[in-house]
Image (cartoon, rainbow, N blue to C red):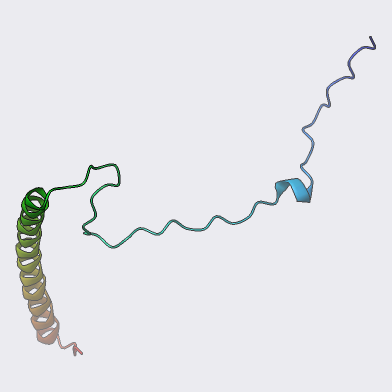
Length: 93
């Protein structure tokens, strides 16, 4: 058996053909929130689905109320900033 050839001292550069990779398609995430039971769930009875949807609706209503409160505070801050800018002589659009 012949001896093994010596290892190269510098790493070899990959050829262009080897280094080319196709661009990955970005994964599409559906808009949040969305309702879709996981595929591994057994089929739900109408009663179970109703209970799940009513709970989901309550969660959405809570989120909606939180968003309304946040929107109100943002609108108030916008008014404060516009008033401040007007007092300083800056026009607002």
